[in-house]
Length: 375
Image 1 (spheres, rainbow, N blue to C red):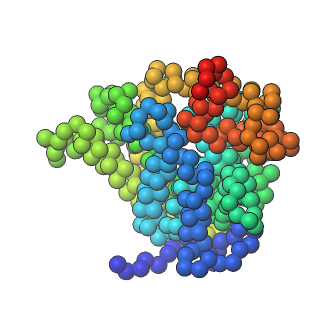
Image 2: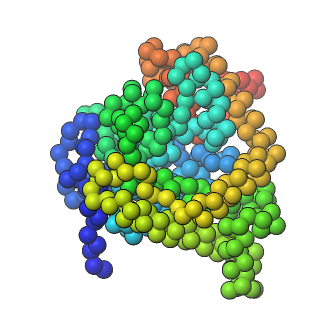
Image 3: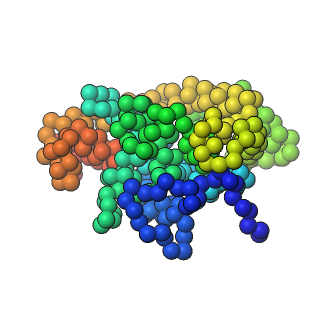
């Protein structure tokens, strides 16, 4: 296979803004391969195996976790980056790290922890992911965190309030200066959206919380299901769903590549600086964007607000709230390393500890603190 030269606006070692702590260049791998490897070996990344998106971990082994989702985002992101001649290794690193700050119990857990942290700076998973890779991982002698490249860190930080951005130094400056991140970061953000929506369709159907009849009213799904049924009229239900989801992903990826190429040409982009100064370039066409929005609205109404999901979300919020209150009332209940941190900022130490829990560990910790029966 012939080597494809990178685009002039792709990120590489020559235009990278480097690391917070200087290190010698790696041998036998690129700077962004080093980032990817550090992320894969991190504790926070391994914990993603037991953190879920919609379904709680114990509800079934077939549903996607934050780990499988991150791998799927990396695969989709690399495919897009290859076609656009971007830095695939950077896209993969951002994709694998983008969820490491997520709480247990998905968005219900984040909302609960953010509510607990009102008056203490709040809680937001993008900022937490950056905090994990910058400070909380304890693996290296020379620095806290993973000391990732600037471009990987800016890709993790997808959005940020201005008051928070001013506290983050160089990685927060683009929010203040109204600049865009690298095209690699923009592509990964949309690869995340493609993976999230389409794979929640798959898990929602598998769980029985949504039906093919309901989804047939959503244009993006209905169009592809009709094409699959026409091409394979005898295909069984599960394989038809897989084929439909695969076809949807392929259509969205192709549309994203085509529209992004048009946007790059329209803005006469020639360098990474041009990417930062231009409007957001990675995008869907207006037609596919509208269909994506329709699918997201459907999932929000019919899956994320399904009564069975809402029941588990209520339990999750109770667990997060009561864990937070217990640790705030007595920091001696925290593990030793978090007790030391609590001496400086108790609320943030408690948030770091709770956010780092897996679904099942949070449930176990809740039982340890509040159950009266012997273990």
